[in-house]
Image 1 (cartoon, rainbow, N blue to C red):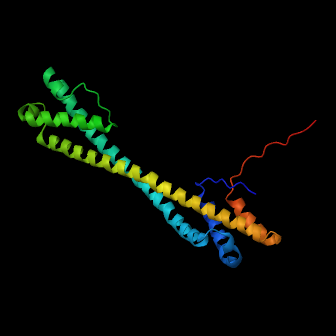
Image 2 (cartoon, rainbow, N blue to C red):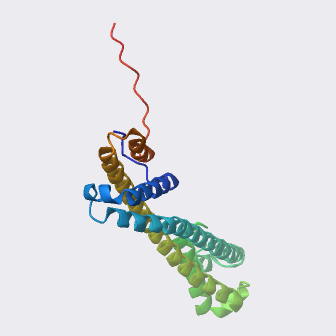
Image 3 (cartoon, helix red, strand yellow):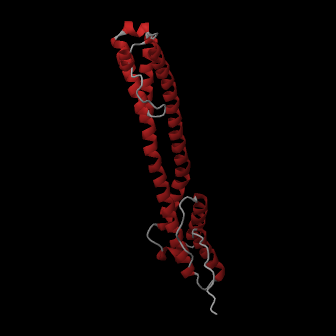
Length: 227
């Protein structure tokens, strides 16, 4: 009997085996149904349809998650550029206490959300509390508004990214579970047919082929040579 452990990533192979198994189960319904779990053939048909829908859906989820990541990266980069420009101006024109108030010298990574958000908040809070000082440093209200918009966009993009990342594995899990159920049905139909048609080699070969189609190929061990 072929090994029935299967890699659920091979969805094309599993689907093809499932379709063939379903066809054989329907064609030999009268003799195979008594050997199969109740509702096996109908459930297989449903899972085959679901797998056809699940695969592109999972791919779409992953694409959306990547798009969300790119959006966040773009917003972070733009905000970081403005933050560093303002810090640079404050460093050159402001007194030490003013530099500290604007966060000059504090670590900020362009790719770390909490770093950029914290840097934006420090600048916005100081600039809004001391508008005359901000203007003397070359920081205008439009700069503050731009940072506030960036803050909102980054927070929204971060929430979207996390939601998409959370959803993508769930979709993949559903797809894998569906594939595993199809494999189980194929094995049930294959073994039932192999018994039913044990003495009809031509028909039995069709069912043995089903089992081979969902089996994991393993490297054969070299033969033991007895001296």
